[in-house]
Image 1 (cartoon, rainbow, N blue to C red):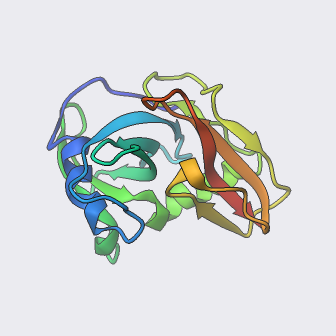
Image 2 (cartoon, rainbow, N blue to C red):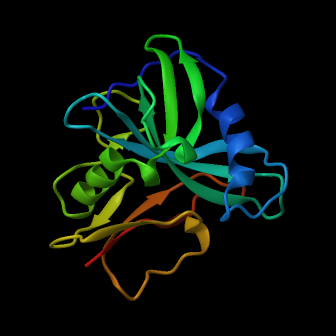
Image 3 (cartoon, helix red, strand yellow):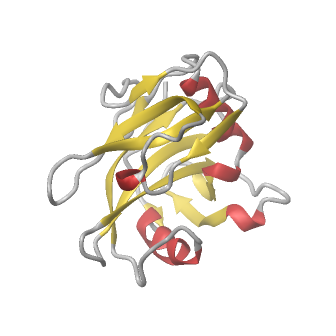
Length: 185
């Protein structure tokens, strides 16, 4: 099960995301004001890569927009994956970490596929060794591709989806649910 370290990161995830988000073609705002609103983790079977599916709320716009940012945490850079680098941070326990957009990380995509087909289970985002009961999976028999939904608050289920994952997040007007991942058959 996922191990969560309660420690510092410098720069913080929020500082890295504030710089990274505006460079993404799916980002709708200007200068983001982000906070964590929800999410979950998955285990890397090899135990080498941290896998986090984070929902961030950008409160610089009205109404605030929820973004789904899957991230991987690695102890070394991934050659050829520079375009997906969110940033580099010093972790208080694990040392230097390279944070990547999980959509471009094969380990995260493989585990998302395992979640979508019922072979993996969502872990709590902030607690070690705990499942996350708020993540709901409509499992697919098989997934030939994983679609990551970047703006889950306004995404209907796609007609070609054969399975999906929904999650909840905290927003100023309640706790919405939305589609975070889709399995395409």
